[in-house]
Image (cartoon, rainbow, N blue to C red; front, side):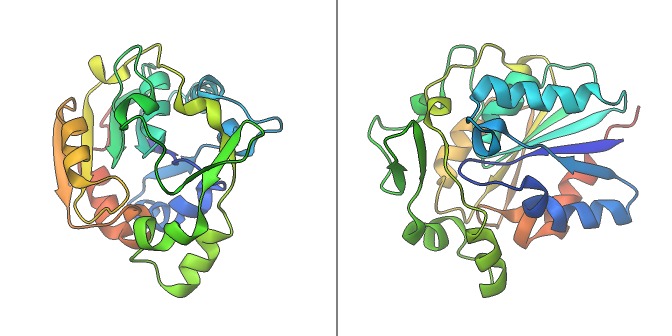
Amino acid sequence: MRVLFVHGAFVRDGAWWWQPTADVLARHGLRSLAAVLPSCEGEPRGDLYADAAAVRALLDASPEPALLVGHSYGGMVITEAGRHPAVRRLVYVTSFLPDVGEALADFGTGEPSPWHISHGDGTAGVRKEFVRPLFAQDFDDATYAAAADRLTSQNEAVFGQPTTRAAWRSVPSTYVVCGEDRATLPETQRAQAARATDVVELPVAHHPFVTRPDVMAEVLLRRRPRA
């Protein structure tokens, strides 16, 4: 049994973000790993479909049943990649559940978010002054410094690319609503969660796998694949 984690937008080093929860899972005998997304770490940057292919390659590497966890933008990736024989359940964390033909940009207002910055070279990022108040209000200083060091530019194309598959239509799914999230508001999350098989709402901010690994791990342990 294993958990495969797919991080959100504008960050690199998914293993760092996931490690606090991975440590808790390991104590319960559950192996986990984090995907490397070409749209955030490739040269040149990959797109949504390259990210999905990277996740499928990790799933292909082992016949073990898997929980596939997507955070924020990662929900787009697991929706595209998650219809795979190894995947027993999709877990969406303050994320998006697109249907076939829907892009991440379709869930917005049509106007760029104030924290979004386009670099003019086909990549985009997040304005650093917005990171702590919106995305990391519950990080201590040391953790925030390490997180800020892992911000990166991402291929801007991913936000307009539509999904070609909707894995949640055939694979059981759990949506984790993060009730104290200031970046993806709880009402937005609840609207997305209506497509999931079941919903868990927690009093946590945008990155519970960093700051509340015990709580995040409990959700996954209760939904671990049995065969």
